[in-house]
Length: 151
Image (cartoon, rainbow, N blue to C red; front, top):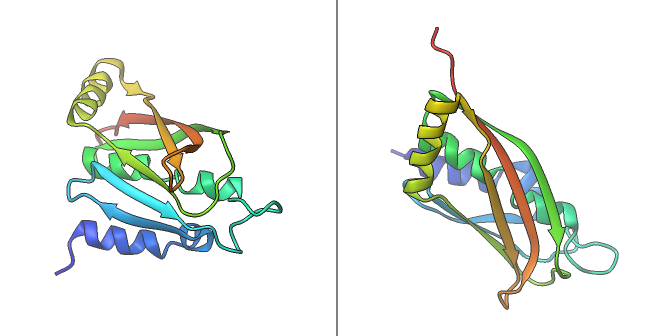
């Protein structure tokens, strides 16, 4: 029997927006609190000056915090991406990677804030790093989280 994590991991690696950009989900923890993603520089994801295309760098950070929080918080919560920005620090060449991590304290804070404020908009910063560990891009994601209305 394939578990939920294995099914999601397989789906993510064959999801057209990620597959088409050459983005690979390398690791997903059983509790959905960590996801590691990488992307090799290929002819189809490089730009005119032979570095990673900026849209592909953003794409490798786009869905993960939303998906992780949907899995961790459960079906009683609405979780949406609300805003994002990317700041390029240096040209990306070779393999780049990003790590998405949620701490149990963050999850508890989100739950408490939703109960007291009705909705929250947490901000997450993702570092896209190259093979030497240098930051290639910083991506800031704003999510929207709210409890679903009980019918």
